[in-house]
Length: 413
Image (cartoon, rainbow, N blue to C red; front, top):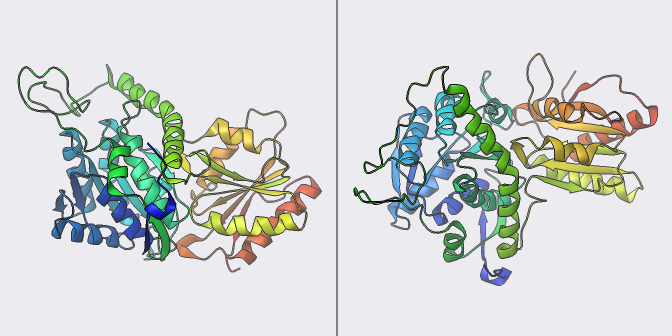
């Protein structure tokens, strides 16, 4: 596909939720099942307007709960449809049971997760504990930094999920309010370019006895009877789990390919699709981060670089499958790593800290690690706080040891 010049891309001023809705509008989705929850609701509200106006040929199913929303997507995807839904926080928790079913049935559903704190106390603002809670469900998890990336990644997610090397559901994570309700100028591609990128509609097979090859793999088709989710005891269950494990191994390659192809047509890419790095080659201190906070961290790191301080950033775009080998290679030569987690595993460390710690375990020489838990319940991570964190890490690097591995950034004492 030829590159689409900027002047041929439509400029929109939208918030992150609207950007996701526009991406879904262009992605030839057959079924959207929806239940409202702040700060996700704008996605399905705006998409319902596209349906009501006849701008899409999508079956919009207004369900009674998030559990039902994901259940409807499971049925639609199993029948060969392209399916989408969106949720946040407590709504995602209500989907828990069906998240595992969707992944185990190898259904390429796309889910927008607008990250929000889990209650109680009741909080509608951003942290990542909702997304971290689904990390073992078998879904691919991508985190975006800005509104433009929310649009781009939602479209990419359908390509990644439906790739026959993958056939797994994808969750696109965008920070509640920081992105979902913040206006940004973005560029969107022409409809026909997105359609070609996705290969058109997901092709549902015709139902006839002599049909020899389904255009959608693993689909409910009376001409080719299949069982989805039957009772599976200890005689075969383990082997079927291995299919998911093997499919996950293919994901990084597919994510990189899709990121590169998107770059070739749009002019936009996000690192290699898995990790995005800045100033890491010679860095003594490296910060790892997910989501919208990466923009603030990059801004502050550039300031430290201008002052001659060797500081770098790694933005983790793909959290599942976790890129253990790739991130270890990037981090291994630094003196100290500051791992930022907008979440906490109570009684342990932040969730990405645990992953990075295990990634570096086998290296004889490895950097010191410090876990910074920050921003719970939507508390802002200001440039001043990021500067404070980096100065602490520079002191750790100079001293040569870390006194306290778990630190809380921006909390009142």
